[in-house]
Length: 411
Picture 1 (cartoon, helix red, strand yellow):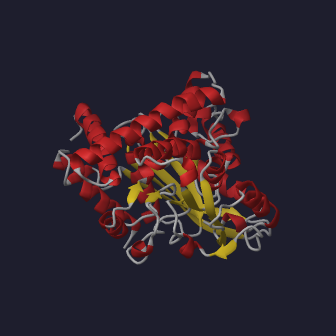
Picture 2 (spheres, rainbow, N blue to C red):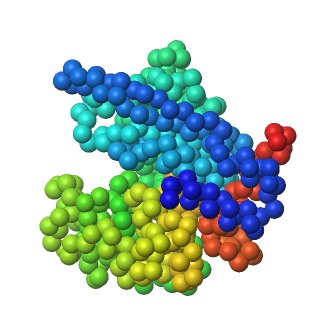
Picture 3 (tube, rainbow, N blue to C red):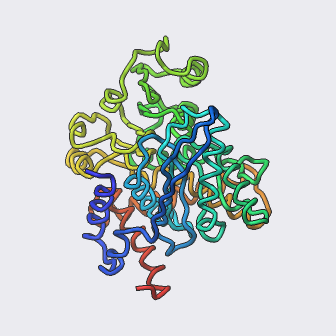
């Protein structure tokens, strides 16, 4: 099943328990605009390679499109369209005035030199210029893209339009108008949400074991924050596999080993474990923080965690959701759990437009109440409707998007 088919199933589940008009649901079953680009790029050896690129602008009812750019060999239009939809939902769940978009290039960036990567990014940025802008569509980093990549996009955009526009992208380097606290924002926002859940479950961090799949900007930082907060991180993995120690991992040592060796293979403080097996470990909290479709109908019956806390986008399929719900496993959905990143991206956009910048302490002080409030609203709606947290989050988002559409008189 395609990822977007999963999206439509999630949408259908929410519409069955909400009062959103059918005409608005009909609108939300397809994006407002789908852009595809062919990018010829001169490689270091003088040859020319052609890359496929995409930008999907899903919904602008609540504000400018917002969403990352991902560089991955498996990126395709179906994936980008799904991610754009989830961004629209995510922004509505946390109540920030932005819509949903997503972009990407089908490429393995690790196979490119820095110069090739920059030429590819600038080619993409030139194609995007007519369609993006601080009041139109604001890209950001995603899988395999970095503040440096965002700087190239911003610089190319400014060259074409002829004026400074730092708000055209977020996730930029601090020297170019980036926000303090943006790098740890997704993980920090997730920790605020997890802390609220832990209180609901009447547990303490030291009683909780955690497995984290993914050691990128999201999973790696989350593991560090959990370790610092007293949680027992017992498993971590990267794309090649991971390590497991039921007594707890020394997270800083794992990070240092990965940094020095490039992988977790041979780490002395735990036994090797595959990504597939990591998902099935006997832990309190499982955090998929890599790519989508990790927990499916095939392995959902073997998940032993009490909580699946989604920090990747779309890691759980609808079939798996149904199985986990029957087994009373709590799933904290991506559109809530990882929304700290887009929230601080919104803060960055606000700072760019005002030309007034905040300290990291100010950023986190603004982030925490937004994440805590969003969790409480989703939890309360789930209890009221007697539905999983994902469905409750979608209901809240659909209602807010519908209110914006109705206020505009667009349908």
